[in-house]
Image (cartoon, rainbow, N blue to C red; front, side):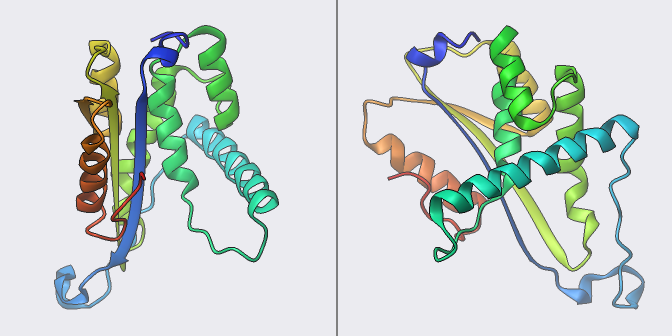
Length: 194
């Protein structure tokens, strides 16, 4: 998908994550303690994680400058990273390079980026045995325009994205997206769009 298409095609990529406490009675072995399952990263993935950290630091710094220290905010750089990762699958050339540079992942192939995020998403739930982490990704596009099948396939497979076409001229489309968000966050985020 070329950048020019984004002027015509409106796509919202939402990446949401939330955590809650686990019931310790469900721990295997009856000890009440479950060992963490770290996500083992190879050398390339470790470098990608470093770029991801740089992105998060820059993002929070810019957000702090804009919002100031008096306002409470809860923002997930990982969620934003997933959204940009999905978006990069629909770009090429200078646009794709700019997205990956923004993410701190310049120089990596699209397959490396996609595999990295898939590994993180699949491993997040086991890192802290006392927390349950859930991610939910979606892509919403104007039903007047068809997304490329390859774009849909990679985002569905690697990012577990739900892909839906809506009539953006219908104000009820906002309610559909908000209902999806509320369901996926178990009511913790009842509205993402006005």
